[in-house]
Image (cartoon, rainbow, N blue to C red; front, side, top):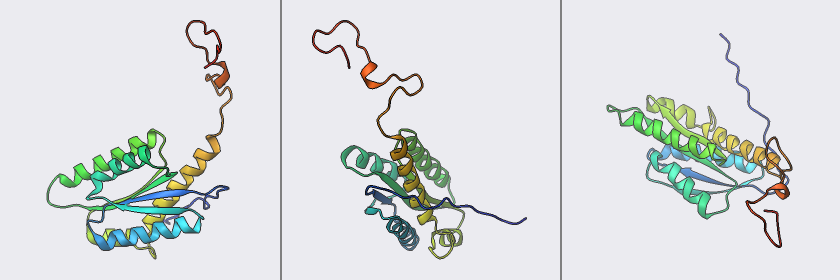
Length: 181
């Protein structure tokens, strides 16, 4: 069976984009390759980024949440690597870090998930290597595409679906000076 992969064209922007890369560098060499791939993709799209490190993959969603509340990033790139070991800790870290990132995305944050979940180091090295599978770049591209969608759909809303335009909101009771919300 022939393998075919498709990548969307690179996202383009009229205004500057700033991403935060959050990395868990437990496997330093793998993390460095993921970071290199992500940074190259971010720079190629004309965006900028900052980098923070956290102790492990479970802390990545928390760091993104803190940044979303306290800073001004347009999107986030989650990077790290979890290699299966002898215990069920692997399943917990994989599932819970992924679930945390997914829940943040469902709240509207633009996150590219580049946390590798692999069976062995060889698989991780191939996926992290910018000259091979380049999953760091893929995570950055995902975040950038979500930022582009947010900007496309994030303008002022006017009577979308069942949502009335902002000036149509009414409050309970009568207001003397300003009857609109």
